[in-house]
Length: 220
Image (cartoon, rainbow, N blue to C red; front, side, top):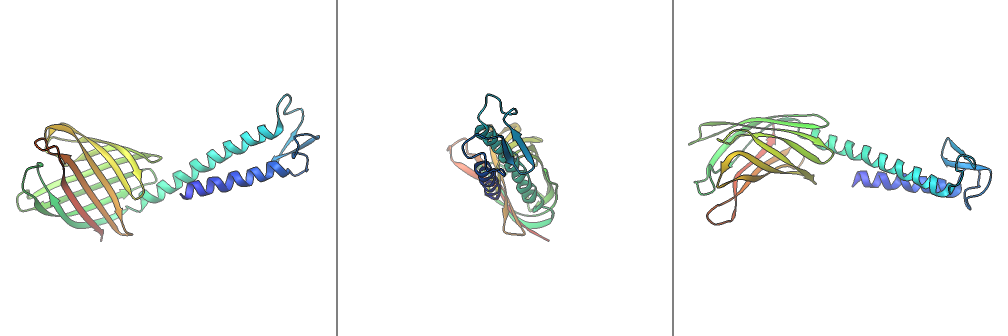
């Protein structure tokens, strides 16, 4: 939303400059010259065979796209860096969709940059004494790709997009888990100092979606 607001502000300002110009000659597209944007003069020879108004509008639109892209990147960087720090919490884990639910306590170190997020942690329970869990993500705009480690089948591939405060990822397991190789993971920002990690898979017997992991963490 912030990126869109900044983009519309930019194009509105640029459009106003196009209509008025700094020499007052752009209103009907005629005259000896004018100004598309502050500091950029045009003359009739520069727009030979073209409508100056349309040419300036194209410049304004291109500038709008550039401004929007820059603002979007800044928003994504700010979002990622909000995950930086050490986290601890509790949750539940199911080894398979029909297995008993186990309570676990977890600790994570989160390392974030303007374009990446690395989660490295361990979870302890009564049955699964200790299991290492990690996720390494890289972003291109709101698109994310990476690797998840925590399954018994080996490292899994991640890909997805951010929506609001959540990064929604598709999981591609190294081998079949619960009858296939796909599942969904969500890395969600919860308040100023919270993070929630969830994994949802489909029960091969019933076809129902089952939450196989949910871990709620707080910054320590």
